[in-house]
Length: 175
Image (cartoon, rainbow, N blue to C red; front, side, top):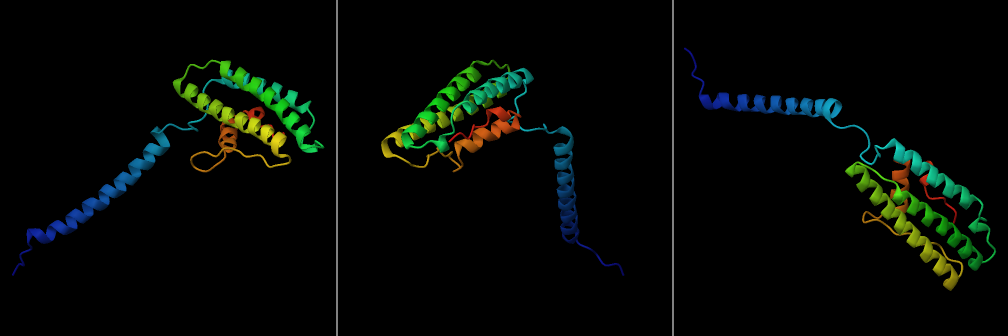
């Protein structure tokens, strides 16, 4: 005699099989998209080679000017150190202003560079505050602004420069 199999007992293995097939197909689809269709590269990368070349020249000139200054760490007094850092800050402010004048066409590039230059503003403000504190309080450590995630603005600022091969646009490390 034949045993009658209920429709309910066939449903569970069929649903389980369909779920497994769908999961495997989804994983394969995800990897196919990632390898063949998704945009590649770093989203912070500036597309304009002309802008990158001009920015590197501006930053390189600023580094050359800062290299002519005495080293802040070799200053004999906090007031001397403050003066050296202040002079370096003036060079960097000019560099930042020149970078801001460079034109870009892409909205993504405009947004990314505007954000980067905003980080430079924060860093320059930190430098000016350090000069003030050196002058008023004497020999003290610099205080650098942190991002919302707790990292230094300097780290984010330098990260953008590295992604775009702007080695001269990394903070000069002069104090």
